Image (cartoon, rainbow, N blue to C red; front, side, top):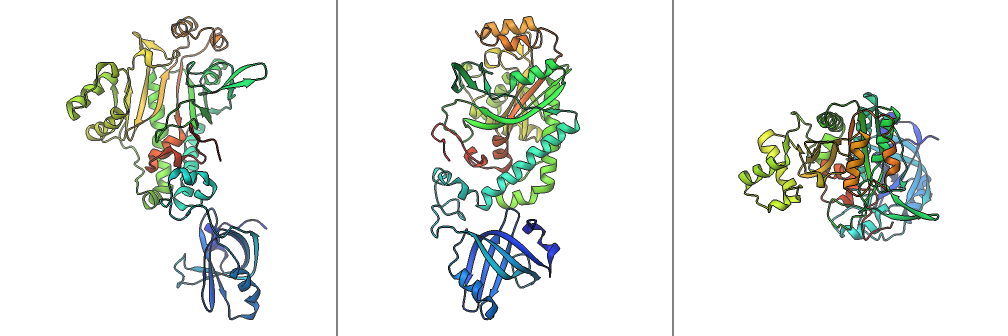
Length: 438
């Protein structure tokens, strides 16, 4: 029989059906037993009258049932306005236990504050049964769906590129080295090289949603050694401003759709509002941003630190963007070349790229890429990478259109949209310097 999801039960009143789910709660009182069943979509109450002889076998079964076991129940769904849970109850004629849970759970799945995050992560499969955690990934799934939807509607092709590669895709550091038969290989830091290969192949517009690996020995609330990247590249652009325009449109579209479906739920569960952008994302040069931060908030740092965004500067840039433009997003441009990848196009020796800050955290680095072979080779030589990436440079020898793109982390974006305090919770399975299981 096809699984009936609890969210659809309103379609089955007064019909004999079969339902299955986790036993979330058991109330066993003198004359009646109440079970609350949960599936991935909703909950429903099962009511068993002990006084009815036909129910004796079921009542005995429930007497020995443990919460978080799974059961299959046959019976009839009835309307009952006295039932606080959805105004309905399921009257069973048969109950089958399909799996049994130990009586004592190692963590409290109903109160996520009862244990520290790392203890909960040891039992992540149980931790995810908590409503707060469970809904993160329902929402995240639709966030990715809407981003994909926007790109499909705009003639992008989804591609899948290798994660075992022969050379580091960003630089020689922060890569995981693995033994690959008789030689070294690396886990990909991004699909950058292969996105650009697709441009040289004539695909014009491509994207990928896939794992990304970063060997960063960092223990912050927003760093992880493996995450899900959302990367895209597109051709025949005139400027890196075209890349910023596309990212702005993509995020506005996705947040609009997400708010329509989940706006109220996000307020209820996470106490956060999904704010749909009403204005264009402001844009500011890095040097001008530091001038504004010093003038407005007396934020002073040594000039040597102003060649990149500090964590505090990111946080204050959000405050500035909200006060000055009413925007939760802000593009920061004109970073020095030593802080950008060799494949960023430069104009007057300044990289043609940007960082995008959202709610005080960087979520994207994007740019127009250098597509001219001679210039690209020279910039790779400056970084000492030309020998390691000879295969990559070959992509540009036989014609390649002007192009650009960006990548963002789905887990970090989810964390910021929902106001989750740590990326450990916005990843289904977290990976960090000290965690490889479960």
